[in-house]
Amino acid sequence: MPTEGSSQSSYRGTLTEVDKSIEDMTVALNSIRARGCRCGRKKYDSAPRISWNDQLKQSSFQYAKHMSVYEHFSHVGRDGSKVGERIDKAGYFWRLVGENIGEGHDYFHEVLKDWMLSPSHCELIMNPNMQDFAVSRYNKYWVLHMATPMPVDSKRGNVRYKN
Image 1 (cartoon, rainbow, N blue to C red):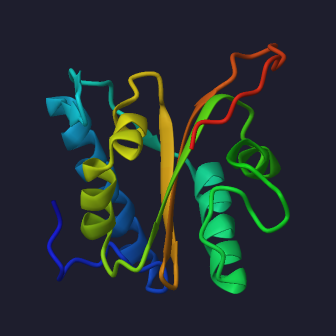
Image 2 (image 1 turned 90 degrees about the vertical axis):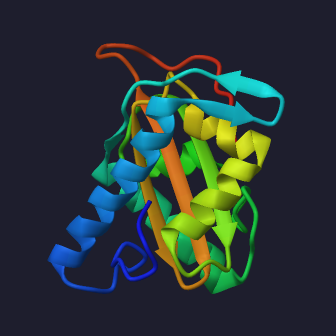
């Protein structure tokens, strides 16, 4: 995992720092998924690699900013929005979606450690059906969005959100 000296916690820097941050987060999450782990009482074998997605970056950043502006730490936005609606707004047509949020960490590896210690947050990270992700930080708020796209020419039926 990255060290505190890495640039991964900042989206305020140059493009090079942002690209490095994306690479660091992708490596960290895929390393965990590759080796498998225990989430609470449930053991997860290795899971397929996930890829960075710019639409999920947009949705995760907008929600981190929303939580910061309203000082509102919740999976339900002050406007009543839920993760699927936020990802829809970013233009990602999803079949499966999930969200982890965190507060108060300076570095990605710190919030990731907390997510891995929480069974429900860990389960989202280890979900083998997830294909895409993005992580954003705005002030003290962190948001991880994970999703799987809807197959081409499909319509979404029963909508369920996994926080």
